[in-house]
Image 1 (cartoon, helix red, strand yellow):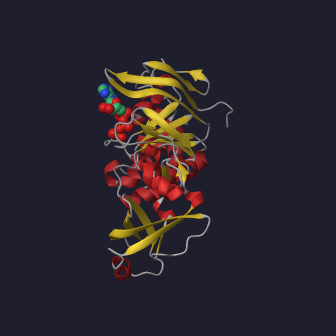
Image 2 (cartoon, rainbow, N blue to C red):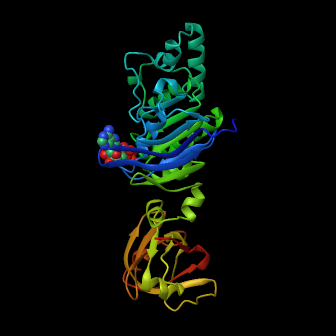
Image 3 (tube, rainbow, N blue to C red):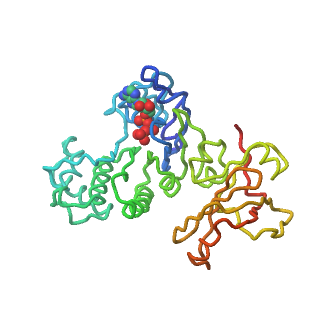
Length: 343
Ligand code: ATP
């Protein structure tokens, strides 16, 4: 572990003509951290990754890798490696040769690189697969080969650009857990780009939420989820209800915009008692979507506006939840779950 941060951005911008792909971004990624850059398509996260890798140069600002200004250095002079979504394995080489490639370029002897490749394959749970060709592997296995290949040179920082994007949901969820376990085993700083908020929340020590070339918030998954600092973050990370103006005043006594997560709201019968630590609003169920494990209700509040409510189907059947449609309800939630957010 180093005391120096792995990566520092000091007011970094990257403009392409009029497009401000990255717009004065400052951030710090700590040594040994699993750090995600999360944001919608076009928000600038891949450009940030390419700036760290050296495939792009900043239009303004400074990039430090372990304290060294690398802003103008070419990729091969930076101690980083990148794993891409499309794996980029060499199809004519065996799995073992693919993994050992980085060592071959450095003229490491064949027995040593074969031994190291086998160790790396063991680490990603592909021991004994070194003689296969990439075409004889599944998508998830190919992804792990790409990871082993990127890690064999022991880079200080590993950059991952939507590496799980091509996998189906089940495999992706499995790989999320594996990737995090591998990162903890090797102790290398991982910087991970994704537009999938669940993925970022599952794996990251901290994440940065990008929007239009800027970072809106940096924090741990719990901080970002439970204390979104802007309306954009509240909407993008998980589902959130935003209540503004007159409706906010009616419920909380203040006109300030607030957010409330759907799972924090309880759907109760009309006239259910409201305790002192709760807010309440009456409404009517406009729509019910039964999703197996839980049900999503869309409730139209008396006085206008909708709130999304999610409840687990612990005791209810699908027939019971669907019967709630068009019924009057009272929504109750604890005051402590309300987040006031700036504009
Ligand atoms: P995605 O998830 O779709 O990859 P992203 O958040 O990674 O999106 P970037 O790829 O960083 O976004 O792109 C940010 C903006 O910069 C986009 O509007 C994109 O069109 C623009 N951009 C990126 N690279 C270039 C380039 N080489 N030339 C011109 N514009 C570019």
